Length: 353
Ligand code: GLY
Image (cartoon, rainbow, N blue to C red; front, side, top):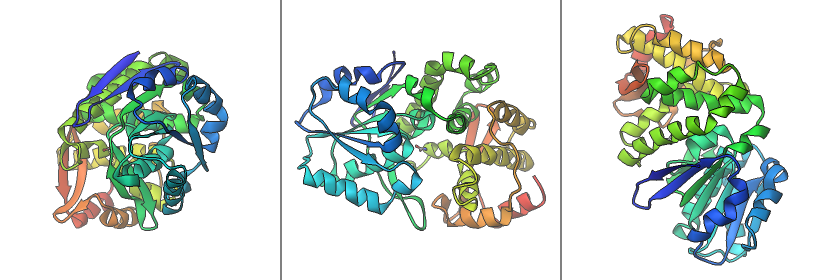
């Protein structure tokens, strides 16, 4: 088992290995403080793995709250319903919430844990690659508003992250690939070694043999960044490489045309081409990105209306008063935050990238 210690005000561990779900009871016993344990999951995950999780709790009394699967669940409606459920069963601040699912469940259960009684301890058991390398780590919790994604949220760190990579076996290919976009992102912004290694794997079987190491590397990069900038005021913004355009692409496709990972993959290519045009990114970086991205079966081009995308970007919370914060690469493995005026950006992309 690989372990990462996240050293924040309330330190916690990320545990990564095959077969950890069956050891959940043993792993959480030392941190259970109160009497109640509530598992929050969704229909898909619970149908597949609910029995295994319940059995592994080995006598620890628990209640289960099942949400519908899908992004629509990350809403005020389900947030309210979950908090009302916490109140109904008499959850108190020394009890424990276990989030068992992908990013939607983790973000919603995390935000409900952050908000209910001003904070209840929670544990993350992420079940998708995307959640295992990104959303379960670092304490960002949120729900969506009609005006945009993740507009209502809080920083609320988990007490423990249990990452069982065996759970990835049941992930659909497209969802697995979406997680790979975030893996590629970590390599691009912080680790040439990780980035280059992603060209080595011939197929998913090969990759799965190395998945513990890959997830460890991603989470360790994120750990360092979050320890430096927990509240996302500086260096943590680098984790948004590919996301400025990515979020706009997702939104332009009404969240149906592209998965988050597909949109981020396209966004990383756009950002590196912009960086090359500005003379900030070393020539050839976008070609390297395209090579890795296509190797992992993610899209490398799309018919995009840049004017519309920049309209969304300007509305997005990533814009500051001085302009849009774009994350660019100096080269593969090195990144920076570059603030750019929206009109300058539009001019650049309209002249063709
Ligand atoms: N997913 C980006 C971050 O946690 O900051």
